[in-house]
Length: 290
Image (cartoon, rainbow, N blue to C red; front, side, top):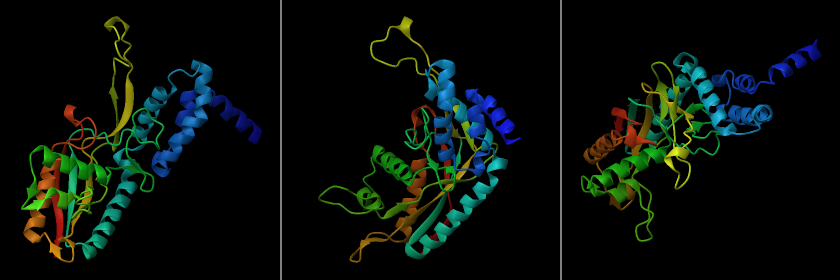
C-alpha cells in the first residue's frame, strides 16, 4: 500500500506546476522562506526535463507569487495577524518603560507595496521583505527611518523644532558620530480587507544596451506585493537626550517630530514609489509620553 502511494505521488510530481503547488500548500501554517527554498530546489529538475531549464526563475517567481496570494487571504492569515498585533503590544509595553516618548503609528496602504525586492533569502526574481518568525511580510525599520529622513532632507529640513536631523536620525560621520534620538521598529500587518499578499507584474522590454526596437523581447515578471487595504503598525520611540548632559527634546518637541515623520511617510515607502507603489495613510494612534 505504501509503495502504491509513493508511485502515485511520483507520477503526480512529474509535472513541475503540480510539484510547486504541492510544496507550497498551507503556507500560513509553514515557514514561507523555507518552503520557497525547498520548492525551488525540489521542482527544478522536473522543470528542466520539460523546458531544458530555460527561464526557471521567472516561471517559479510567477507560480510562487500566485500561491502566496492564494494562501494569504485575510481569513487564512487572521491567526498570524492577531499574533503580530500581540507582538507589537508587547514591544509597546517594553519600550514605554525605556524611552521618554513612544508613539504607535499605523500605515493603511492605499496602493501595493513593494519592499526589499532583492531579499537574498527568497528565491524570486523580485522578492519581498518577509519575517521568518512571524511568517508575515513587513517593512524593515531601516526603510521607515530612511524614507522619513530622505523626505525631510529633500524638502530642505535641516532641523525640527530646533533639533538637527543628525541628532534625530543619527550620524555616522567621524566628527559627529552618534546614535539617533529616534528609534523605529519594523512595521507589521495587523489587518487587511481581502488579501494580505497580491501578485503584480512588470514587463521589462530591454535587457541590455543598444537593443534595436525590432529585437525587443518583453518578459513579464510576476512578483509578490503587500496588498492595498492592509493596515500595518510600527512603534516610534524617542529619547530626550543623547547623553546625560545634553537634553535635546521635551514633550512638545517629541510630538512635533512624530508628526513630521508621519507626514514624511505619506510620500511613499519602499520600491517604485515614483510610479505609485507604497502609498499609505499614516497616523499616530497611541502615545505614551513622560
